[in-house]
Length: 324
Image 1 (cartoon, rainbow, N blue to C red):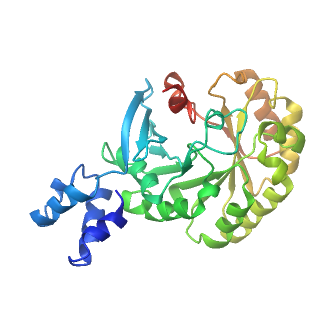
Image 2 (cartoon, rainbow, N blue to C red; image 1 turned 30 degrees about the vertical axis):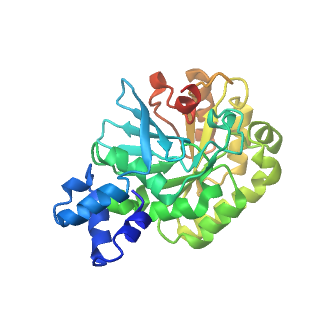
């Protein structure tokens, strides 16, 4: 729902109408017809002039573990993906995209193989979350879908600031970055809400990281980690480090020792991610992941192994759009 369009349509109506429309949408309304505290004439005006969503669902895949992945198209025909992850403890987490495609070409990411189309608007980002909110309540959001959130800083932050209306607090909102320094610096300086920060790292040595993530040539790891430490100092919150485990590439004990050497145990928590294969790499074995984690444990660097979700529906970023 594009509330800017709603504002224009309702310019001659009381100013509180916009708030009423948004409150209904945020609670999971599926149409303007449900908004019974709006006059019928207002609902008719909205139905005729303001599409209920800026995105059109094009394809959906459902996993045996309850994960749901939806491919949308924007009004101008660009692909966008979002994923709903259901957990046994009752959590309902949504992974949102910030761009259609991605210009940063990380070698292990399916989105990196796609052509970059454009940044998404704040409303297109929120409509991904609203799509799943219409199915059931949600309580966590991660900006880890298609695209680099810090390249679309203003729209991402605008969307994040409205998520509490959908039932997702700022403390349960995470924005991930590969280390796009201009956006990361703005995030540290400008976002006062307790939104979590995640760093997509995947290698602790610049040479290997640059092979996997070309952005590292532009913004070396030392500079990115310095900005993360500034976030920790200002916000008093740890940075989550995402580390995808690639067989024979970054999963040796020596790589774990390098990781422990560059991360402060009081500032970072590592999330080891079993690789959801996209055809470019093989995922590390359970034994390799366990050996890697053992090194981090010995160094007293906090770490967990992410529970794999949606593997049977190709739920890695960009896989659905790339195969459609």
